[in-house]
Each structure stands twice: as structure tokens, then as C-alpha cells.
Length: 121
Image (cartoon, rainbow, N blue to C red; front, side):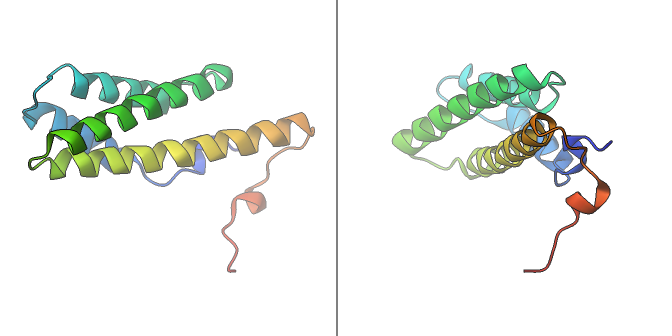
């Protein structure tokens, strides 16, 4: 049986980018950046489907709060803003995959490889 992580795009570059941002970013509140990154990574690597949804919501909330903070402070935060956008997209993909598998499980269906194929449309 396939897992939802096999549906995700290759998000390792996002993890590495957020790690680089955490190491090099200089911000007014140095606790903000590690907080969103820590929540983001926790959501990515959560294996319990029930807790995953909660972790995704927490990470999204922290990412959005940080993005608003960067917008209000102004300045050049392009690297961190780009990392935040990538992280939000990855969390959205993870959330959709988790929901798909949850629905399939509730319907008593097994997810097959053919279900995971991208169909031209």
C-alpha cells in the first residue's frame, strides 16, 4: 500500500532552504524563525495521521504569522519569504494527500498505484 508521502513532490529542497534561512537570517525577533521552521519540520515528519492534521494547522498558522510580520516590517526578506512560500505549498500538498488517504480509508478502499498517476487533463 502506498503512503501519502509518496504522493508529495520532492520537498527535501524546501527543508534544506528553510535550514539555510534559519542559519543566515537576521530578524528583529530571532525566535520567530526557528518557531515556524520547527513546526514545519514537525508536520512534515509526523507519522500519526491524527496528529498530522493538527501539526499542519499549527505550522501554517506560524508561517502566516511570520509572513505578515515580514510584510509589516518591510526590508529585504526575499530568502525567508521564498522559504515560507515553499513551506506553505508543501504543507498544502501534504494536507491534501492526508485527506485523500483518510477518505479512502473511511470508504474501505485501498490506494493503488494507478490512483496516484497524474492524468492529462
